[in-house]
Image (cartoon, rainbow, N blue to C red; front, side):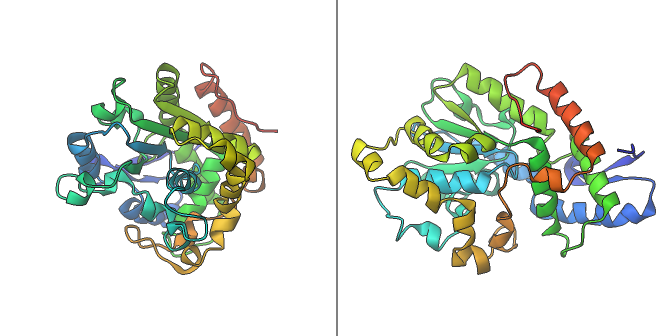
Length: 324
């Protein structure tokens, strides 16, 4: 991949809004990135509010991830698992609400002024894309019994999903080789609102090694490979285990199929509905959900550079990704 010389442009609060190359045609990409920043990226106020005003309850559940790592899927699974005594699969709110509306991104909530946050039914279920180092102390406290579930994904598939998602904010511009190249170059440099993907993953991984009772570290690819096993593991970790009767009745398999990307894409709310906060169609959160789609999108040079970077960044961990 050709290295592009650039000047990093920062906007309000020093948030990166563009990385400009020498090619004037890349102005289009800069504009796309600015539009994404306005809607996808966190506000400084939201992060500060989360840190200052969030007080963890012992039964709180927080789902954490880099964007486009399987967040929608994890939200649907978790919501269904912990609410299965209240709803059947025929009357679950997932049929009429997008998972992101049922499990809100906590940095988009004004915790200081919204009373509903403090009186939310127990257990409270939230999500965050914030790095582990930016989480409130009450959430990370080893003495707290609240749970954190983190999901990571092969960075090359993560990038592809991010790229396509960014197009939803850009008026549907077609992919152009040079714009994809720039986006990938930025990704490999860690230019992202939530920080470099390797730091994000490694922070949560290290914390999960130290507090395995509190933090469950999942891989998207493992969930795809053996969904039933990991749905059961997720339920056990959250202390909402399936009974023997539920297992014998095939409850785990039913939930796994119901919450699949393919199934959720077919729900009317996800075909025609719109996300309130981001003002984009709910369908934007559902693409292929496949493992290894990077093979169909990235150039051989991108793949080679990406693999080398990933191997370098994760060499001191037991996290591995399949590139075969």
